[in-house]
Amino acid sequence: MIPSDVKATLSFSDGSPAMDLPIYKGTMGPDVLDIRKLYATTDKFTYDTGFLSTAACQSAITYIDGDKGELLYRGYPIEQLAVKCDYLETCYLLLNGELPNAAQKADFDNRVTQHTMVHEQMQFFLRGFRRDAHPMAVLTGLVGGMSAFYHDSIDINNPVHRHIAAIRLIAKMPTLVSMAYKYTVGQPYIYPHNDLSYAANFMRMMFATPTSEYKPNDVLVRAMDRIFILHADHEQNASTSTVRLCGSSGTNPFAAIAAGVACLWGPSHGGANEAALNMLEDIQRNGGVEKIGEFIAQVKDKNSHVKLMGFGHRVYKNYDPRAKLMRETCYEVLNELGLQNDPLFKLAMALEKIALEDDYFVSRKLYPNVDFYSGIVQRAIGIPVPLFTAIFALARTVGWIAQLNEMIADPEYKIGRPRQLYIGATRRDVPPLAQR
Ligand code: SDX
Image (cartoon, rainbow, N blue to C red; front, side, top):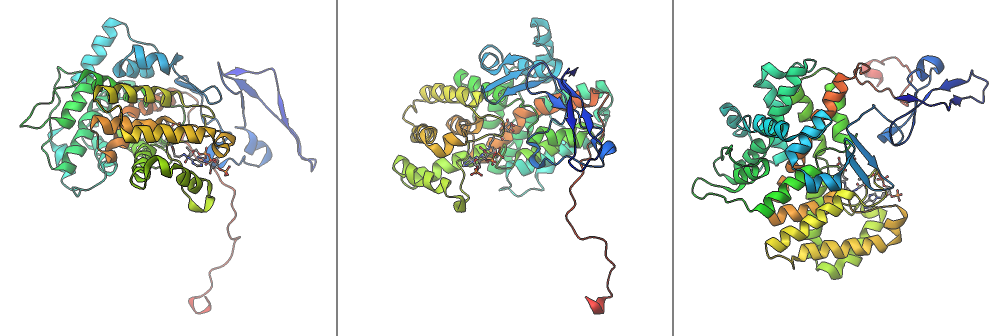
């Protein structure tokens, strides 16, 4: 943090003593007002539910410019990473701050590959779930359960433990997600194959069976790897903030990541890709493109509580750069599969066009976000809709770990403990039961 030569002074109309608030600058983005001494000095809290104007930390990992629609991982534009790198290179970058050279890439890939299997006992966790359990319920349990297996890497303050836990989580998420899927369809689990790439290995564990091998299609594997890259990290979003707050208590990394999985499940966050595809299928079932006008009218009617899922974003007030890349990936995958005329993709593009010309969305700066097209790509690849968010969690695991490790390594970090504006009953005595 660089002290700004601009000062902010907080003054009160009741003559209470004014207070200078230091301002700090980052390398890019908005400056911050340092209010850490506000309560001790003024006996007042700030009030910012939803954290619309609050920087909860300093970070060097991901930068978003919502007005420009810009996303950088460690300074590299997502548009370049998605084309020039693979997901494991992106993991190395997010964890270490620099892209790997050839030797570092080979070593990192090998480390991850050597940790793709999970303990044989983990399969017995799944038996406790109903077969129709949502994969995110299963994944939350499996990731949390990892802390019961890896006692040699749960001291969050030990950098060696943090590194081992990072490799294990990145390596094992594809195995756990595919196990969660196989369990719901009643098929046996498929073990990882160490001679396959990260994305190809995941797709084989998803789609192979003991009776028929799965030959990964290079275009689909590249699309899956790109989906992982686009979802890898995204600044201080709800699930990342959950991981940071959870980890700030000193709990083990597996428990903190499990908390992130649980938060991501929500339809306003990572659950939006599942909700967006279900929305498109509903419109398609009820008449398709001809019914878009009716649906948009419903969205504009506040009483309907219907949202255009996959649209809008707390930070992006321009097109989410990931949505543009996801739409390109849509074209590539649908062309490869001969599904150029996929009705759902055509419906999504028609819906996007109408929304982007409608003042309701334009005035509120509501643009497609990463979730608007990701469901169509995953459905075309053969991923079942309820698994979309689990794949988002698989990809985001590296971001959560990088952010958690950055927090723990920050000498200024403390356990997170927000306060409140109390609006409840003032002190009163308990009346005897007969008088209640
Ligand atoms: C992700 O934070 C991240 O970085 C998240 C993420 C990541 O990578 O981690 O990018 C991943 O979660 C993407 C977002 C996925 N969610 C959805 O697609 C669900 C639909 N979107 C909305 O729920 C909403 O846009 C949010 C939750 C994403 C953002 O909500 P905000 O910033 O709190 O904005 P808001 O709800 O205050 O909306 C402002 C206005 C409101 O109308 P008015 O009160 O001004 O009349 O816009 C309206 C909202 O009603 N609005 C929508 C809308 N999103 C906002 N109206 C219709 N459809 C929508 N999708």
